[in-house]
Amino acid sequence: QTNMPTTGAPAQPIGSYPYLQTMNGKFGYNIPLCDNFAIVPYITLGKNANVNSYVVLAGTQSGQIGVNVTNDFFYTLGGGVRLELPINKYIDIYLDQMLAANLDQTTYNVGTTDGSQINASNNQWTTTLGVKVNPWEKLQLGANIFYTNYTGYSQSSINSLNSMQVAVPATAFGFQVSAGFTFQ
Image 1 (cartoon, rainbow, N blue to C red):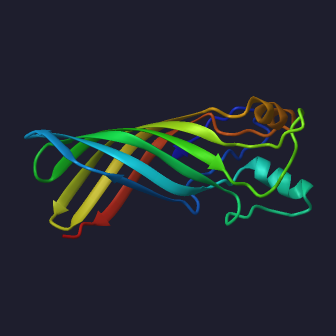
Image 2: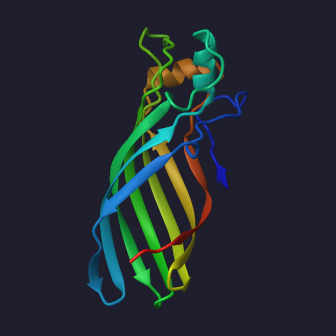
């Protein structure tokens, strides 16, 4: 479940929906600080869908109907730090802080009021608080809550999008659940 307040007019209900056709990887190293505490610095790389109302509008203005999630996406790169605290051999809690740049690769071109092209590239700060539970050896269940703040948009792009009653995300918050298997 995710709630995404946006920067502009509520007439367009679609902000970016980054959970469709998305793949991100985090690569880090677990550094134990003491018996029950570890820090994990990491880098993150990924590709995230850019399904939003400005892409639909730009596609329509370019004579193309709909959104193409294959060509309308962000490259995401960044890094972060995760603090992990194992409660026992079955339960871990963690706090994760990530900073990433989302580089807009949208294929439709619509001009802004100052003559440049609309670009929804942004920076994101995401804070996640979660728990991982291993009910038996190979099964891992998880749950977390998260808050993301999106900043660094081009002001000319924001002004043009707002004049078209189109919005981009300003924040996102919600919760996630997961299930997976561990491999040794």
